[in-house]
Image (cartoon, rainbow, N blue to C red; front, side, top):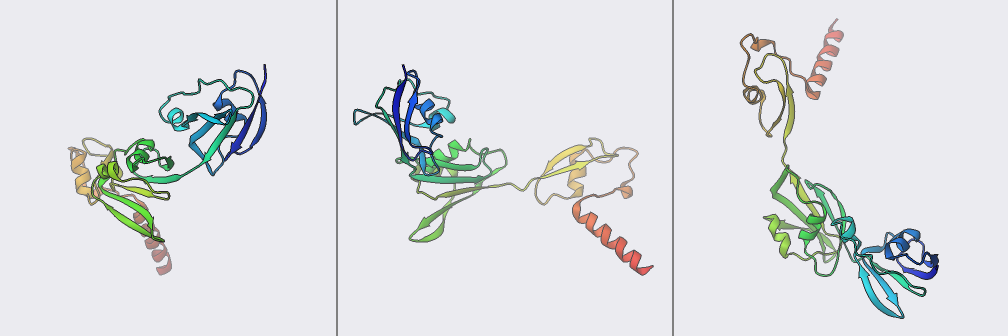
Length: 230
């Protein structure tokens, strides 16, 4: 039979709802629009007879695919969405940049984990932690990402991981291995030619054409200047 429950706290549409008797916390959250922008995804309480009988962490489902919605709701139950406590921003060379909620005494390494870890371009020697301390924004030195295992999160923390400045360059024509290559910052055209196996037997080294945005602009300016001289 149908049941009546109450959605309260930091939920988009608080109030009383009539649900199917097989409903659980997740289905009730969907009906009420989920946690609001001020609501926690990690601390949602099921209150029955004025007692908290269960707390749900939606990150366990959304990030780790662990379902924990086995408790069937009853008439008179209240689902209370607690306010969010700590939001940490992770950006730069991670696989899923974004804002993540941390709870209790979770360390900053949890935020990096929620961001699916570092990507293959990450410069692990160039990581920044920005934190609000005493009313000012400060940069805390991070020598190695393993330091995050021992740093508790503060609300408003920002983690930035720099990417190595690789260059994706295409080389075609009379070289042994034409194609697209990932080059280090500072590499030049001769490095690219070497990476492609060098010139082929019939190559004309003085007949190369270099194409990029800067060369395009120079060529346009040269054409304009030539036109003006005429």
